Length: 218
Image 1: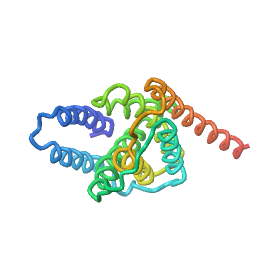
Image 2: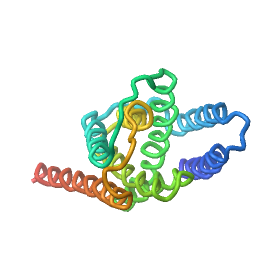
Image 3: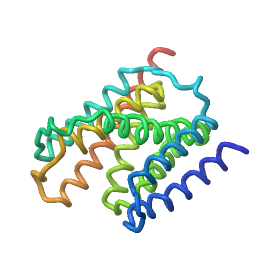
Image 4: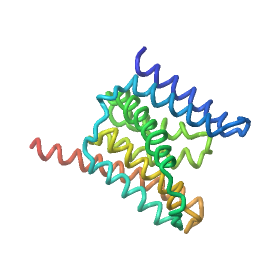
């Protein structure tokens, strides 16, 4: 089966499964989560082989983490929760969320759409946002914007493993150890400013990389 069919099936089935998970109708939602993400990971590694998992340009992935977290801290009040440290939570966010999403979106999907250039990067970003539709349209907006930064980092040479580490650290910090406890600004200002800044940062990174290539070629 071609990768595009695998990805389409993954996206549709995952959105449905996540909807079931969030419905509150399951007797054991936690078990369902681990089964779902385990299947997603194994399936993804069949389509995007393990041998393709590389660190690549770690600096690009690190820049994404620093930039996104800086924006988070600028717009939100945060509170340390060291008691929330848990090996299980680390596995959850780094492997069963971040690695799954990086394999499918920056691995499988981005390879599919890479041939059409900038529109392909936009498609990859939007589909990443729509994957989170069960969390609401504001989350779709922000994850599309954050996704654009990850997509560009991948385009510029960051490996799936380094992106998964950055993605996992972002989720782990923001959801467990150092979560936001309130906005510094009006919610509408946050959604627009945060998302716009992410997209501008992604476009600037592309522009700088393009300029350097042209200069080097000249």
